[in-house]
Amino acid sequence: KNGGIGMDSTAPVLSVNQLDYKYEQQNVLEGVTFSIQKGSFAGLVGPNGSGKTTLIQLILGLLRLQEGNIELFGTPIQKFKNWNKISFVSQKANTFNRGFPATVYEVVAMGLTGNIGYFRFFNRLHKKQIYQAIENVGMSDYVHRNIGDLSGGQQQRVFIARSLVSQPELLILDEPTVGVDTENVERFYKMLARLNKQEGITLLLVSHDIGTITSYVTDLLCLNKTIHYHGNPSEFYQKSDEEISKFYGHSMHAISHDH
Ligand code: ADP
Image 1 (cartoon, rainbow, N blue to C red):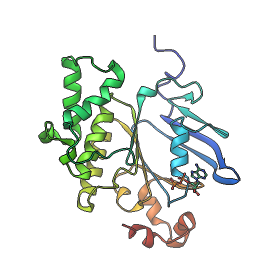
Image 2: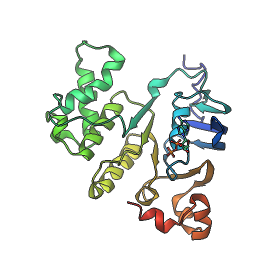
Image 3: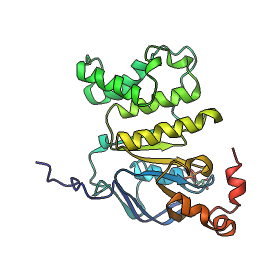
């Protein structure tokens, strides 16, 4: 039954091959090639303007491919249909004003309505999935609280729960710690590492901040128009400052003290 296209369970979750992209005359991506295996916690880092957003939009099928190709779960993106396997959380789309009339439970439930249709009643299994997703991001104590009354970091956890409720296999997070207080950033990454290890969700986290994430990710990808490094984060740090600044255009010291 599961023998159709895209059911190759040994294929990388994501594979990008020789990707080029340009806006008008500006080349933004050149020869971008990498793959992410199932179970990885990948951190894609690069300074502002390095092409991170463009790459993610291509992976999500929001921009048309120009040169090169992308495979999702072993299927070329042009033929890929299982978009429910992929969830995307962007910092930009997510802010509720103080007093917004929805509880944490209701916001997380929105992650299911896309699958079952609005105005349908949730059955017991749906409710269980909602509570489980809330528990997985450590927000069980806030289930009936108003979303608008929570801190930026707490809201961000709720948005992740909303994206988890549909049980994705790949979760892509774009700058998820923007708006999270510095003292909660570590907690936030710990929560992601737990989701990755215990729930087996493959994570691709996009950040301009190479500082904290390197202690949590299994794969570090450094992008600046092309992939300058892909590998173990600790090996990255063993490189000389000079070599690293080639990737970034400024020193590691400057990067890790950006924020
Ligand atoms: P990042 O997310 O790493 O900051 P982006 O992918 O947003 O990088 O941008 C890469 C480069 O492409 C930047 O120089 C940016 O100004 C340019 N760019 C981004 N979006 C557009 C667009 N829609 N039209 C023209 N240039 C763009």
